Length: 89
Image (cartoon, rainbow, N blue to C red; front, side, top):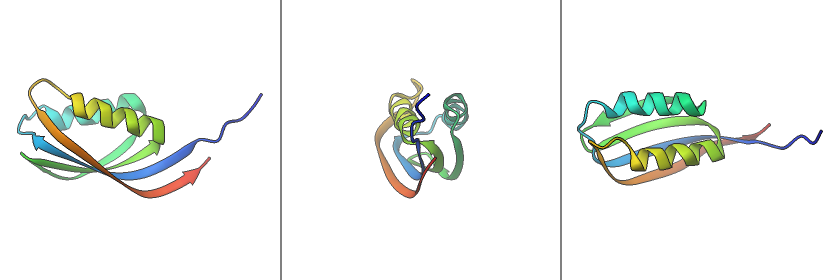
């Protein structure tokens, strides 16, 4: 059996747009849980959500895509990502 290296990241993700819907924060939590990512929301207002997210890079990419498409009642203009930690397992 060949063991693959899996790169784990901790990233700060900033979501910008029309995010007023009360359903978006719980949606982010459910989506992160489905992907097996840990996350902490550090700021949330109707135009900006900031979160720290931990997990494999490919799954964080999937989280970004999911948030950009998001629930129907929000409009995401853009998502900014900044890597804060990388480790290989």
